Amino acid sequence: MESTGDSKVDQITQLKTYLSAIVAKQEELKKALSIKHEKAVAARRVSTQIEGGSLRNLLVERDDENHTVDVVETPGMQKRLQDYCHNVEELEKELAETTKLVNEVTVALAVITGQVSS
Image 1 (spheres, rainbow, N blue to C red):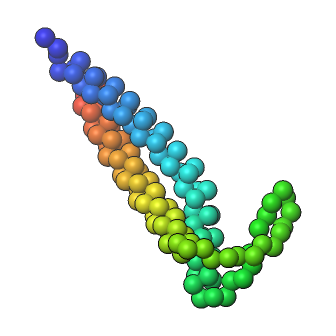
Image 2: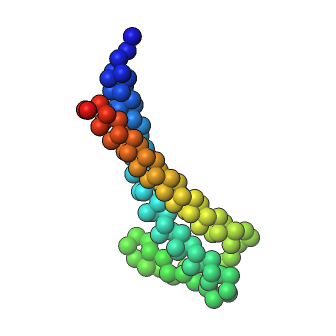
Image 3: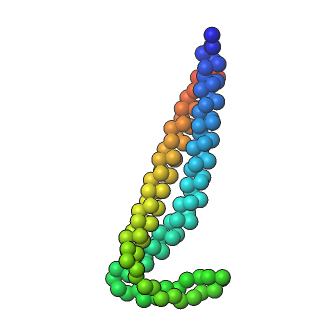
């Protein structure tokens, strides 16, 4: 029969493994979000300017040089830009949820660790 101490040690090990997996996912989300956030800001700006009819060309960087390209609104372009921004918002929510999970697991781990050492 397993003692209570062994059971708590197993719980601690499981929580640490779970916490490591969540933190790894959180770091992955942070990296993806930082890139996508910059793109979403640009997409919102382009979307607003296209919608208002004020955008005819766009300055882009390619091969470390700036180039001006003509913007031609294609069917569904506005919707794709809005969807991209929405996807970034969903990533932000997922990151907030993983942060909450990390905090909850950390608290649970601290409580169990405190009980084992008592």
